Length: 359
Ligand code: SAH
Image (cartoon, rainbow, N blue to C red; front, side, top):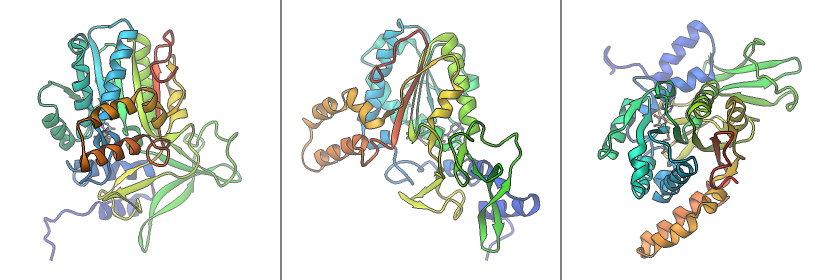
């Protein structure tokens, strides 16, 4: 028997809300699933990694963060070694990538001396994990990129943008419908309602036909505009790695629990929920800076020498650990694994040449 004090599940709370106010945009549903103060998925310290719901590239191999660390130092050198700079990670998860980056950049003390480290993280639980992992340095945590000081910006974001809430629209014969979360007798369901001209996908009439679904991620546009403003004024670079494509076409909302796909509506707050990143929209929102070509993660890592690094690390390994190391290299780079689904894009000052790996 439950008690009166027992907390209401997120599904029950959303159902009550929808019953009284009508269907909600997917962005509200996603935000509740991920960030609800009581039930949000990112309230769990164990969300990411082999024991969590899903694994990310830095959790697969130290090589990922090492390559990015070496890349950051090179870009910083190419930009004339500015000092001080803001070294920033968006959504650091367990802090693994930043820990690998910092170990790598320690070979360049001048870069380390220039760095003020900022971690953009909303979840207090994730912050605690990051603090433990990065206990030898002194990061500053912020909630919003707008809180950064006026400094050259060296920013990295792996699997951050995919977690930002999306809205979904379906083209009809006469306009666009918004796909929302409503309820029926079985529980939460997707439903479609006509949407006003003010929120429908702009500029997508030319490359879609009736029936097509397009996703929009408002927060990603604000963040891309903010990043580009800082790079335009103070210099620096941003490296964005995520799964996605040149443009949004088709439904990509997905939920992952215990490393398996599950129905996103089935257990709000219990699964990681995300959607493909529309890199074209980020490029469009990043005004006044150059944007690199969009590369497949596998190609980019190969161009930056992951295979040489893998060989060096393999010298000290044998048996099962060697097998795991080889599998990790394959997982990060092979087109059948993360190599081509994941994409890499960089923003940089318009007067500079493209950063390493993008030229
Ligand atoms: N980059 C990490 C973790 C990816 S999971 C890795 O590759 O392993 C997404 C991370 O972004 C989590 O730490 C989550 O708490 C954080 N996050 C998601 N949305 C955020 C937002 N709007 N602002 C700040 N942090 C956010």
